[in-house]
Length: 367
Image 1: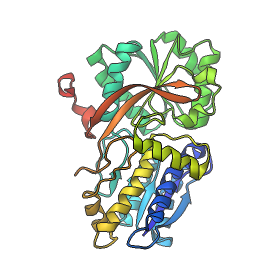
Image 2: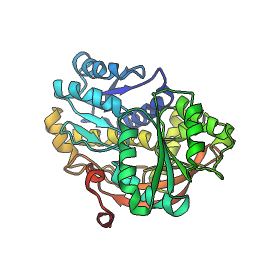
Image 3: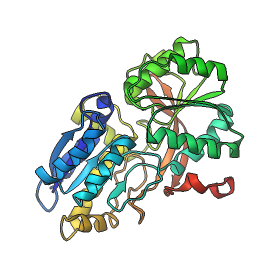
């Protein structure tokens, strides 16, 4: 079996996406140590899209045509995923997409290894309203995921008495947030919801807000995409006390995660783990399990087999498997930044994915 991996190993997204690739490579190593697929080692071919969305499609073509990959594991931003899809279809391939995202997509050639918004956003909004406040200011990078998530917050927030008092969007890899910080100060929110993506942008935003006199005690940030990789680049006084929602944090307490953390440290040294990395790890293990039972490695046979397998080593703490809509169930957690990591302070039961949830949900439907 030959797995193509497409990530940004250079450019503005490199710090984050290298760490996601590590999860995928760890899974390949574990599969090969256990005997590979059909007795043969799994082979890996990697394409660096250089943090340029325009190269994502080219990467899929290269991996499928020149490298003869049986399946693609990769992509991080929704912009990259959307750019990859035409090439996935043109090559009649499969994409294992590792990270949580905005939902509102169902593609027969994609298996979604991360969470859709109904699996993390509903519980998070309710928790924010109960614990932090109801006046929200939303900041995001200017592309699909932050804008769709902001729309969902505006639509659903009133169910918990939440009011959106302002919004700002910045270009990808932006590092100047002075006008955003001024607008936040003017709006006087209780909470800032950050959908800012990328280590350099996230670090700059948190730092400018801190330098303007705001900290977690006076104006908490409730993020959806600030991972431990981002926290590692910030002074602890800047990040401490702020919040994040995810389907996984490194401190999640279960046997599978303890094994995963040990294996990650043994393979890569001192290492930060996060939800998208775990998604890539689960993706590789799942597609290799599927390859073991599939009659061939054609996309059709692999896709059918992926609906029949279950990976029990998921570090999130629940069995990982795909439902008929190609999504998987996930728990969610709220973490609070402490010493460069997230301490889990709230936990919610796994939900099956509903990719179109934000379009039609009402408070009664939340159960």
